[in-house]
Image (cartoon, rainbow, N blue to C red):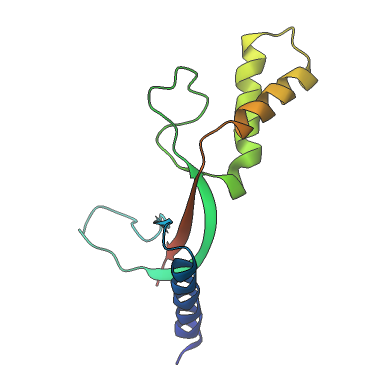
Length: 127
C-alpha cells in the first residue's frame, strides 16, 4: 500500500469513528477549490482528508447588519478572529465615539451570541 493510500485509510477510519461516536451530527464535506478547478466536467475525483468535530455558522441572508458574507460558511475553530474583526469594523463605523474597549466588548458579545451548529467536517482534497 502506498503512503498516500495509508494516510487516506487513516482519515477514513477517523471519520467512521467520529460518525460512530456522534451519529446525531451532520457530516459536512468541505471540498478544496483545487478539486473543482473548472466547469468542464460534471464530476471530479477527490481524496479523503482530515475529519473533525467543529461548529459552523451560516449567516442569514435577511440579517439587516450584514456583518458577515452570507455566501460562505464560518468555522468556529478557524474564523473567530476574522469574525470579531468584522464585528469590530461594523460597530466602529456605527458610532465613532465608542472606545476600542467598548467595541471589542460588543464584538465579543456578538460572536458569543451567534448560532453555531455542531457538525463533523471532512476535508476533500486532491487525489
